Length: 273
Image (cartoon, rainbow, N blue to C red):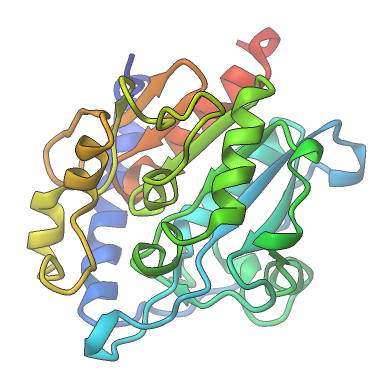
């Protein structure tokens, strides 16, 4: 089941914007400034369900020494979708504390509140360490992308345990772009990989080669997911691709971030469909 065609006009525009931003980020560029937008209207202390947004703590692209981190649009747009639906959000990272950010664009209304020391930025950079996460508190976990995830997500036993626990309690697991790197070593209590036999998407080999990082990342994510038994479903480069398999929701690239969160919301809040 895919959600690519739910909002074609808005999705196409967002895909073009995020593809351009991703290319600038991989080239080490930056985007222009703009004013902060309003904060989301929904107050989190009035919310009943909780989602954990899980992020990388790794800030360098391998031996290149180039900076990387968590890709801000893949945090900010899902955060907006969750809170709009009345779902509370907590932040965690592999090591906890300050989260290195990539893909920063002050012209992105969703991302701007996470910058410059505001309340939301403070929460993001006081992230919970993965080892301290209590999975029983969460109805879902969402793994944001960014190239940094390729180095620390697969090695995070704490995030792997949290994902397996949430899924086996009937919760939802989501990931976008390089975020599915967190899933490659997740095993269920049966010993089977979480992704085995399930349709998934993630940053493709073709997209990795397009940004010239295929020889930099420790492995190609598409290939590793297939090795784990996943049924990989790629779309054309930089196009939105959201794949839902039972309670596992994955997306291909930055353009898919909001769609993954919206699909997760539909699973968490079926009455709102």
